[in-house]
Image 1 (cartoon, rainbow, N blue to C red):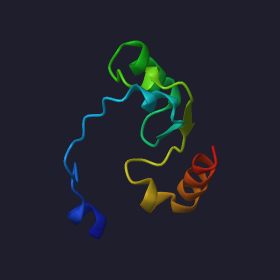
Image 2 (image 1 turned 135 degrees about the horizontal axis):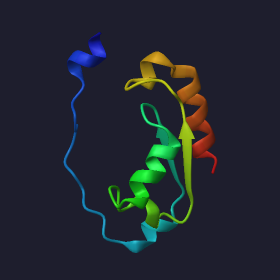
Image 3 (image 1 turned 30 degrees about the vertical axis):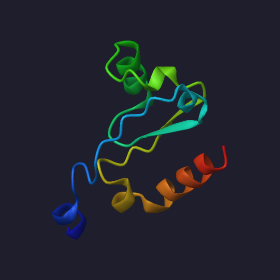
Image 4 (image 1 turned 180 degrees about the vertical axis):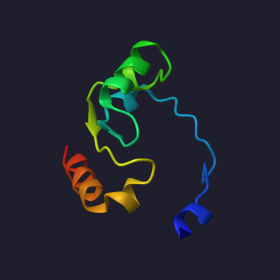
Length: 86
């Protein structure tokens, strides 16, 4: 698979965001290899400290594995389009 051979785990520099207005921006977490319930558990356990601070958070299940853009591209495109209209 070409994607697997050329993908980078972190393609760019990590940016540290400091402006608290970021928590007002709607966030959609698409859950490909974990469920929304698992994401909620991780948030409650403090494992993903930024997500619980989002004022407008939507957790969406896609049950696709690690590469939804390969395994379920149409479903992923639909979810992204819906998220963009929030």
